[in-house]
Image (cartoon, rainbow, N blue to C red):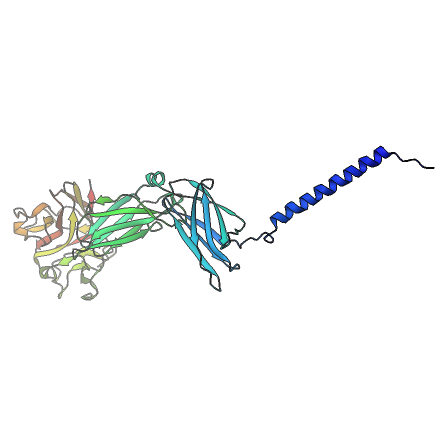
Length: 410
């Protein structure tokens, strides 16, 4: 007969009873969690972006699939701060956009969740974004303006390049038009210069440079304005061989013509059947020069004048350089020819008045420069327009084939 160990049977019986009781307890606890049904999550926001700005960020996204979503919540600073965005669903895709203000310059970790009317939330999405403020602003510098060149109402501005990693976009220029109006233009960072065609002559202008810290930033930052006083640089145009001639007037005999703008030629210089001052060339080397030639069947000249107008800066030492291809002018010529720099845009005095006219700043009689260069130094006490050119009274066989004119700063 088989014997049983009642102590062991009692032990197993008690253990089985306890396990059963525990299991019932666990099952009962589970029922407490699902009394109101299974756990429910709302659909999360799609295409989520948080864009940086000046002490703020902009949140953008789409609600696509879940019609129950009624609210978006954004948390930051370890959930100590938050923002709530109400959402009204339609039958389609709904765009969500909101700006969170008053965020000091920093890097933020945002947690974003959607909710339905019952308080059921979506799975959290975490996005890191920055804000920009005084520290970034203090790092910005205005783009360097290399120079500005006024020429009547036309103003040319040349800029230096900049480090593109700074987020630089370009510069805003505020100037006064020739009609006295204030106007603003934008110069892209990829443009090294700009020509303003309607700027009031020598009127001050101001400019500032614009930046975006990232390509997705919602705000633009600006440097302080820098005020600039345009400084003229006297420049002579159509001032070297090959000179251009006035095609409207044309050539006479295939050789003689009148110089193209900005040269101004008076009637006394147009002795070759209504033209004069331009020489298409009688022989090698003399082609397309400036030349007042008398004799050899051509009339004499009396106060023939050719000049152009430019602008000189105040108290700057300049030098006019005048070079010939060939010439037989002499300083001993009666009356003769003169290089002249005169104040104003009204042209040059007559030969007999060159040495005494009050408007004349500087002059030099032309002679002894066959293939050589003459120089004339000058300056003006204030920014001024000046007339630069030559005036001649000559008889007999005289010529001066001019190669170039140039004004340099000493």
